[in-house]
Length: 243
Image 1 (cartoon, helix red, strand yellow):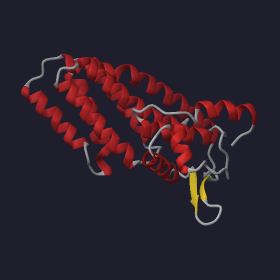
Image 2 (cartoon, helix red, strand yellow; image 1 turned 180 degrees about the horizontal axis):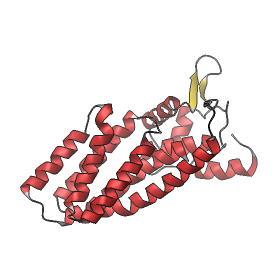
Image 3 (tube, one colour; image 1 turned 180 degrees about the vertical axis):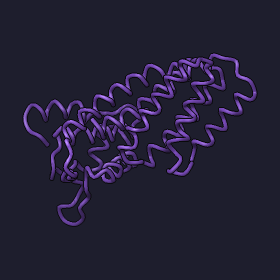
């Protein structure tokens, strides 16, 4: 780990209990950011699994899945044998490109998209839940949910976006739907820059089901809250890998 005051500061912030909701995604965010910010540097060994799980207040299963995701992204590597463990990996080298300019553009785009999404999509969900839906509307929403659940990776992103657009459309506002469509388009570009993580997909499926259940139940406040938690989970992953 980095030394001195920086280590003390980030140990208190990054290495502290994560929220119960979105625990998997936030664990990834904390660990990935600690690497990208230099709190953990190449060659550093992560604390033992039990200690790290206790620090974050998550189960060891959740921690293992988070580390697996980071390994897939090339941020950490596992070594066996005496002196083994999980270590921060050497940064991946890229072909000649203006890395600093690209990263700056991604970060600016990331925060803009996440801010807009946090404002718009929870409100769109609450709006949909506040309306009286026809039998056809309800059936259609469930069809979109099924299509976005446990689907093939190659069609996952499109099915996910279609569900979010269906939710927006049920609110009855063409303007709101247009904004959500723009958010989903921009979000898709960002999500393509990070690895597909099975644990996150499973969690996202559960959150989608909760959002749809709240909308069909006419529970506007709950629909807003469930969508906020879903949006926050995606934001945690994107910030962890891209910022």
